Image (cartoon, rainbow over all chains, first blue to last red; front, top):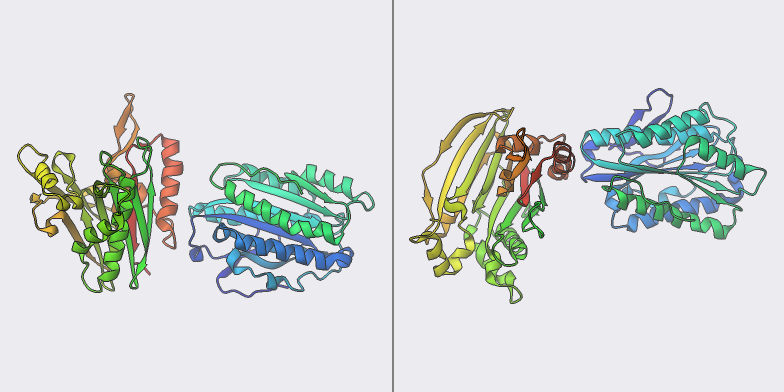
Length: 247
Length: 276
């Protein structure tokens, strides 16, 4: 369920799909450039044992980004996915995202629509990025898809996700995009090789495997996401994406 | 009403001697540009001192702009680390009141205002001998005499008022009478006032606007006419926040790169938008 109702946000349909997303009205944006960040979080039933750690990682990432000198040039959209994709909030500037907004945001249950979430996320970045580029903002993007399982409930396919990523990489709506697939508990039942294949087929730029969902390892996740975002934000204007960081 | 500003180093300069500043003071939006003389020392600092001096003069002016306060305020900022000649710089100020947008320009440069009927009213200020009358010449009688006396460049302001259509073609031009620098501080300034009822934007820019060059059909480079530069500089897609910076980033970073345009001189721009 959305955390925030905001009159400065407007909803847009993602062309060619039943998906939609919300984003800050361009007329309400004052900067010259933005890094658009999409975080997609798996909330299928299996994440229940570590939902607290996932929520903490999300809050840590937001908190760190808010302290960044580039905070005014970052916009964040957070979606959760189980059997369906739900938008926690649409693209809005980091200063408007408070860690407390994510309290209780992870509500595990249902299956895993990993492909739908990835497709929804990347397409929303490309579409909103195009609107911003048309309005003469400089834009790049970063995607983080966090999952602990294989897809079993999507309407979209790996091929469609791959096409969305290719369009984002080669199109002119974004100066560059980094796409990071993060697997949690990848030691379990063939998940690691599955996600590695998904990463390759869909064209993600990086795959991070967190072997087991211990509190210590997930605690690093928030810092990794915020540092990756910071790196991509600093790359804006260079024409290319940032270097991938090591988890 | 709100303001924005932008500045960028020219291709022939190692250090940017132009500066631009914008914001709000006493509830009024303002923009300031300054262009340091490239043959005087440390005018990158001086351009900033003058800009901040002008901002402070605006802050102290609750009614009419106290132009005579700018130079003393800038001098007070110079201190002992750099010579006073660092203040050899032009200075342009644009600010809005409830009913008007004012532009004050000391030295050479370009003023442009957009009328609500789509036309552009441009004022181009140049000095005889390409030697602008800097405010700092008021500090030293010898320098003033060298500028205005026999054998000197003259210290004569030449002002052209030009009207451009919405497509930036010239529809009218008037060369105003010569304005000579004198001991009167007011003689250093060109002032334009635009009713907000009729004009929704006014801007001031340094003479770098006239330094754009493009590849010539015959080889080499040729000057890009000012009206063509303005057609790009003022082609806004939106007027919120950093409207000028977005346009100039796109113009300088993409159009100029793609078309092989360059600007040898530094370029600074400031504007006040009076639209809703």
